[in-house]
Length: 233
Image (cartoon, rainbow, N blue to C red):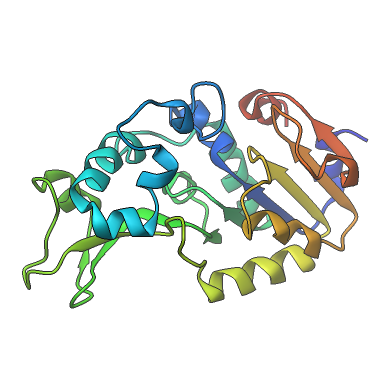
């Protein structure tokens, strides 16, 4: 059975996506040949986006963050738009994303579980006052609050734990859907990757340019660019 037929027959789809969902919007992924982890910096990118680096080298963190992690002008691509359409049609019950770019919401999706946060949300670590992305981008060096505290993006850095409520909601949605579409993710980042083990439905689909550790458990594996696949749905 092909993807289009599965979607047509499904009543409760959950989409679980990673960085590959946004590459067609010109946001680089992490692990591909041209991804963020292949860049040459004074410090390895994996180290820069860790909690300890943020607290100990805040200025260097923000230099990398503003340059490579934030894309305020990008637009949703066909994948984001098709998913919003499926939700509007009542077929898609939730999107679970590892991305922090806000593109699902910009495309019109309502039920989006953001496992790793969102760059458009920021808060003062001292008084918890909230700030938008524009404030971060216009700040010189390290953005600070009116109270003097340092502002942190509301994103989950390495060494930080995922939000409990988001995890519970993701598990519930995966456990109760009839079709799970996993796309644009290597399924190697935990605990997010382990969420697919909660699937009990009929069709488990993986769409990714490269192989994943879960391919052998999937009913359908498609190794093609996401934008090509979704343009045919």
